[in-house]
Each structure stands twice: as C-alpha cells, then as structure tokens.
Length: 131
Image 1 (cartoon, rainbow, N blue to C red):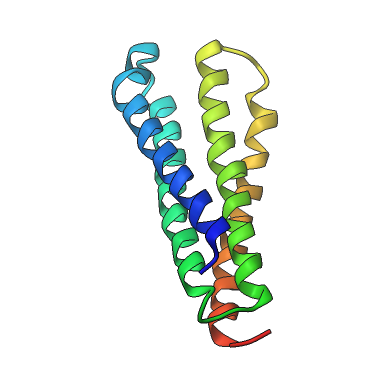
Image 2: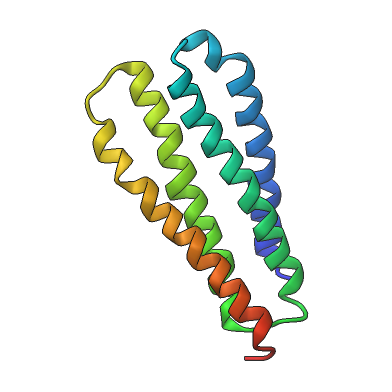
C-alpha cells in the first residue's frame, strides 16, 4: 500500500466534501448563474471521482509495485490540481467578474489529459506486475 497516496486521497476526499457543501449552500448565494454553479460542481465531481482512483492506486500498489502505479497516482493528483483547481478558480473569477478567466480555462483540458494518462498508467500498472 502506498501510504502517501492514501493520505493525499483522504485529504482530497475531505476537501471534496467541504467544497461540495460550499457549492450547495454558500456558493448559491454568491451567484445565480447556473453555468457558473455547474462549472464548480463539475470540479468537485471530477475531484471526487479521482480521489477514488487515487485510493485504488494506493491499495493496488502493494500487489502491483511498479513505476506505472506511481505515475498513475501522480497523474491523478496533478489532474485534480489542474482540472478541478482551474474550475474552482474559473468560478471565483466569474463571480469577481474579471477578464482573466480565458487564461485559466486553458489549464482545464491539460488537467483532463493528466486524468486520462493516470487511467492509462493504472492499466499499465496492473497489466505488468513487478518493476
């Protein structure tokens, strides 16, 4: 078991719940724009999905101890930061009505690519036992 990935997954999972509660209660009082709310909720949803992926990597790392599992875990973490983080920042910028949201929006698909890479590395990791 990879304790680092397990710890990070637990913290990111807790953060997912906090951000989801924030979206359901406080964020709705800050904006009535349904699109802005949906962007934030998409960030929370994908963060939570990939927290479970990171848990899976942490648990499977004991049986499938190879570089691909490390790459998978790191990609999931990076994807959460870039994909979900950019959506949270986009939401904040839209609420603040700043013009910089287009620059942040470029980061979101890069985070998505890290999610895809994480799943591919997870597949490689479980396909090839050993180092």
